Each structure stands twice: as structure tokens, then as C-alpha cells.
Amino acid sequence: MTRTTPPRPLDVTAAFPELTPLARTTVRLHPRPGAPTTTGSSVGGPLLWPADEPWPTCPEHDGPAHLGHTPDDLRASRRVLAEAHSRPRAEGADFLTPEERTVVDRATTARRIPQDGPVPLIPVAQLYAREVPGLPGPPGTDLMQLLWCPFDHEGWMPRTELRWRTTSEVVEPLAEGAAPYPSVIGRSHFFPEPCVLHPEPVTEYPAPHELPEELADRVEEWAEEHGADYQYDLAVAPGCKVGGHAPWSYTDPFPMSCAECGSAVRPLLTVDGWECDGGSRSWFPLDDTGSARPTHLSIGRDHALQLYVCEMSYDHPPLRNIQ
Image 1 (cartoon, rainbow, N blue to C red):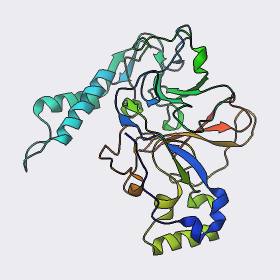
Image 2: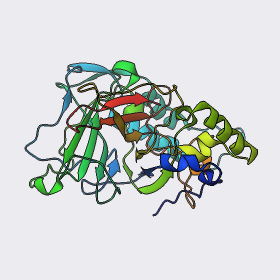
Image 3: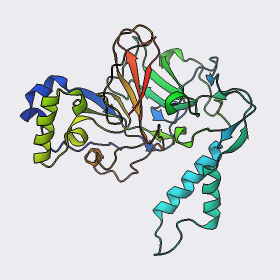
């Protein structure tokens, strides 16, 4: 099903033509729960992986046990909660049955769970260039894959690993279901719900924090006079997306550069749990009654993880940020 972002409530460049050269195209990924395969783009789905390539693990999390939750317990809890939300409930009736409450409680109480060896990284995103218009990447590649550790690392962020591939070179792929998977998930909000994607290019403008103060004041005042909010309705699209502008909100903009060479970096991928929130509801796709939180992901205090890449070399490690 095609997901279509509603037209913006105002044409900001008609009133402020100086914003025109600042426009960028971002690709909203519109993840929705489904059954992705290795041959398609996904969040939380299986990866097209060479059978002879070692699966990455976290060097900081080795066995024999870790405090957390099992993947099966988390999946069962999400299934129970989704069913409970979907059914009618009489006034005063309990939201969950006693049996359902047991399932949910088990997934919210961390316990020590055996883990044989280092914790395997889990698939977070797989993006094919044929499905994501303008997908960046090293020359000759047509597939981007993101994996991360399901435990907190520095700054309440997961440790990430980015892979670029040329699909024609994956002659003998790992069979679906054969990839190693951790027996324990340290943080439930690092455990993505398997989602298929519905990529859609849209136009963005810088967050007000990145505009000259005088221009930002005029744009915000104009938008408010016309019943809109520049930050949430006209500037930066919410949700999972590729490229575009940084959604500064958690912090003010600060200088960022490649740790390897000091060059400038640019937004690559935003991984978010929400399609939109209360402030950015105008971006929710037309004719879509799905959940506003399809991926079940959350970084830090319910924020998104952004990856930036060096403008000089894709070989340099990506920079992470929370917004």
C-alpha cells in the first residue's frame, strides 16, 4: 500500500523565497508491521548476508549471562498489548486478563538470561537502492544494512555497525532464519518490530534552530499567524527517513565532524519509533489507520537515533546522535 504524506498546510517558500535553496529531499520510509524477507527493504527484518561472512557481535557483551528479556517474551507481550488495544472494553473492565497480565509483566521485568558467547548484533534496517530513491552509498553499492547491539552503550545509544553491499556479489546468501540472534535483549526499545517499508520522497527545510535567528523569528511568527507551526508542520519530517535535514529538538545544533578526518558530515539515516507525534500529526500519511509507533524503537528518553556519514569517505565510521 502506498503511503502519501499530506500536502503541507502552507507554502513556506512562497512567503520566504530565501528558504528555497535550503530545501532537501528526504525519503520517509513509512515502516509498518509485516513479514519482510531478505529480498526487500525493511526495519527489523532479515538481512541479505553472505553465508561465508562472519556475523558481527558486540565485543563488550560476552557470556555467560546478561540482564534483560528474551526476544520471545517481548514479541508475546507486544502481541497481547496489540490485541488488548484492538478489542472493545466495557466501562470499568480490566484492560488485560490475568493471563495476559502475566505475559506483559514477564516482558517488563528484567532477569539474568544465559548467553552463549558474545552477543550477536541484531538487524535494524535494510535498504535497497531500487526501493529507496537516491539512497546514498559508496560507488557500485546498492544495499545499506544497519545492525546494532541490543544493550545500552555510551550516551544511552546502541553500538551500531553499518554495511554497504553490492547485491550481485552475494552469490551464496545465508538462509533466512540461519542468522545468529541474541538470547537476551538488554533494552526492549532496542528490539525492532519487523516492518516492511513504503518509501516516499518529500521536501524538507531546516529546523528553526539552524536558520539565522531573525529569519527564524519571522518564519515562525508567519506560520503561527496562519495556524501552523514551522518546526512541526513545515520544516523537518518526522519518523524513519533517509537524508534530509536534522530534526533538532532534543538539543540545539552543535558542530559535528568526522572523527576519522575532521571533515563535515551529512545526515544519512534517522531510526525512529514514531511515524509522528502529537506536534507533527500533520505528517501522518493519508488513508492510513496504522499505528503511529510501528517499529517499537526508542533511543534515550523516547527519541530517535541519527546516523551521519563523512562527506569525504563512506569508509570512515558514521557519527551517531540522539534527537
